[in-house]
Length: 332
Ligand SMILES: C[S@@+](CC[C@H](N)C(=O)[O-])C[C@H]1O[C@@H](n2cnc3c(N)ncnc32)[C@H](O)[C@@H]1O
Image (tube, rainbow, N blue to C red; front, side, top):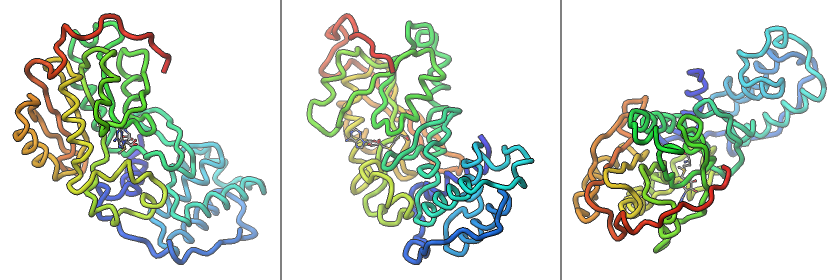
């Protein structure tokens, strides 16, 4: 994946999903008419970059390059055949660029404008309000792969390790794991982890090797500081983790021991303040037999990923109590 693509996504996701500022364009946006005589891709990129900059749209050049490249059938401007940089565009192409750029002027994230975005080498469909996968989550997936791949019992087992993802959004994490592990199926189970007893639906799948989640973890008071791209287009329920960002995290942690195998693992993406908060919370709940065994930093050096391991017998559901045959597998 190209570095500037990662950077664009990092910016559009806000700095750690916190602290992004409101742009003036949000309130001052006016329609921009196509300029006659702008005929080729390079000129269109310059034209829209200037407008985006004037209107305070973040990542002005990258946004216009993505839009022009998309209309010309490429993922990035750099990957366009050079002849297309200077070749005259058709009236239809000019109209498409005009319309998509107008969406960007209304602070729609580029990912939704294009309708797809790459994650771990997969092109995922993007539509509001489904959460746009962030680049740091690729690091969470890579950590899970590192941990799972060397475990012969997991890799050798039929179908690979049994993994539960909580909060799948676009499917970025699950589809990446499906793509890179020996699994051949995923199941999608509508499940609200805050509902009492919701986990009981999962018992028929058998004890899990691993639980992974990028849960809603933004501190509630930080929500209003998020960028317009996020606030206006993404589902707040995918972001807002309550007062200390821990509402869904604690539900996952309380649920996991009932579902995990002995020594099973939980991998979480969190806010940099959460390693300490989660560590303290786990110490207050020794009944869960969960231990924070490792914390990893993201590419910006912030502690963002947790590995928590279960030890001791399963709570409330001993191994011998698991149902025998698994349910029929539904193709993912
Ligand atoms: C930050 S998004 C992560 C989406 C995706 N896994 C990713 O990394 O791109 C959090 C996800 O958790 C889901 N979610 C929010 N509250 C939930 C709940 N109570 N139970 C289950 N999932 C929930 C949201 O719908 C959203 O899909």
